[in-house]
Every structure is written in structure tokens, then in C-alpha cells.
Image 1: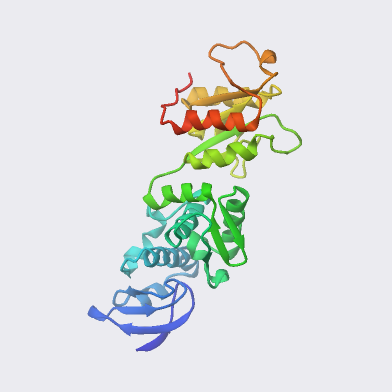
Image 2: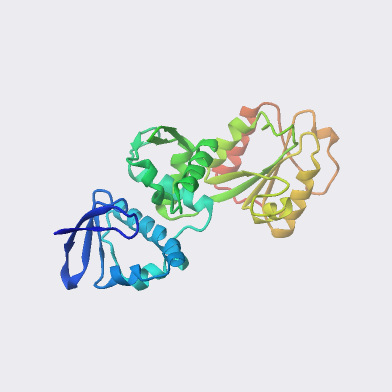
Length: 303
């Protein structure tokens, strides 16, 4: 046995020779408490890649090894496998998909919502989210905290009830659906029903996304509505964005649920098919939506 630098995480770790001249790296940041193998000659060939190519491939390889090791799988890589990682369906391409990887990790290492999971060497663990650096992982963590899917104290994490439900989807390989929400803008403040409805949507397998005029990726409000799996439009206050989003969703066949607070229904325009859920208290709205979404009832597509 000898020591060698892991190409993917830069840790100096013990290495032992395996069958067919492969090298087995033991206990690096890619595989804490485990090991992975590189086929004969792979280490040197990877080291000869250009620096930009290494920057593209090595964080993905580290993340792939970490995920497979956490799932208890044997890991053996060669040059071709590493070079194919950017195009692999195994590698998450969006922030939401990367967030699902962290949720899945927490689910695999806990027994129930609220169970604490300590991530040792957190600053060296951004491979848990297939992130290129720690800054990106911190962004993912904060996003999950704001969505009330996880709780964090230092290096200790736990899943909330909503996070557990979404993690179940991630672990099983199923894809969570996106529910786009649009409502009257009150200076950037969430409406009073948000604290009841957002966790409910998560429990029903939806990722809630509040529609904005322009997303960071450049998508317009109409494009966001058309790309969703479900649109929840609260018509209280007659927000024009809700009608614009509904039209875009209808054109794309996205199911729409309209809601309006009691007293506001009389001011709504008379449009064919516009039959909103009328609610008076957030708890009431949450119960109605749970019956609609949790019953397995097929939502009617608009248009």
C-alpha cells in the first residue's frame, strides 16, 4: 500500500493495487469511509487532460463516486466513463435536480423527518450536490431552507415533513412535479395562505415555484407557466399576471386551479370555465387543495 493524491478531490490517501493493475483509493472526500477503483492507466491519462477539461470532469467524477459509495455500490472507473459523465442522465443538470441529490442523501441516512444527519467536513462535501464549488452548494442549501424542506444547524441537517416527501421521490428515482404559483403582488410579501399551501404542495409531490416577471435563467412569466406541471392562480385582487399565466398554461395544456378569497369572487370577470375555489381561511383552502391533489383525482387540463 502507498499514498497518492486523488485527482478528483485532491486528498492524499492510501492506495492499494487491485486486480488487473487497477488502483483503489481509500477514504478520500469522494468516498468517505469507502473506496473506489481506477482502471489501469486511467490515473495518468486523466492527469494528461487539459486543465479546462479537468475542471469540467473532476467535480462530476467526485460527486458520482460519492453518491455511488453512499448507496453501497462498487465503483470502478476508466477514462471513457469519466469523460462521458457530462452527458450522463445520472448527472443532475439543474439546481432543482442538484437539490434532490442532497435530499436523497439525507433520506438515505435518516429514519424519519427531523432525524439529524451530520455532514462531516462540510466545506469539502459539495460533491453531495454535484456542485462545482462550495458556493454553489451553499446556494442549494439555502434554497432548500427557504422552501422549508430542510433544517440546518452548522453541519447538522434534518428533513422536514415536506422535505421527506420530496426526498422519497428523489430516492425512488421518480421526478417531482412543479406547481407554479401566481398571486397579487403585495410588495414582495407572500400571501397569508402561503404558510399552509406551500408545505401541502410539497407533501403532494410538487415543487412550488412562485412566478416572477423574469427568472434568473431569462424565462418570462408566460414561459414559466407553460413549463409547469400545475398552475395555482389566486385571483384575489384580480392580479393581471394570473390571467396572463392562465392563458399561457391553457395553450400548453397545463392544469390550472383557480382560488379566490371569500368576498372577491363577485369582482372576477365572467369567463367561460372560470370556476375558482372560494376560501375564507388559509386552513380551509389547504384542506380543499389536499382533497383535490391528494385524492389521486386526475386534474382536468385547460384549453
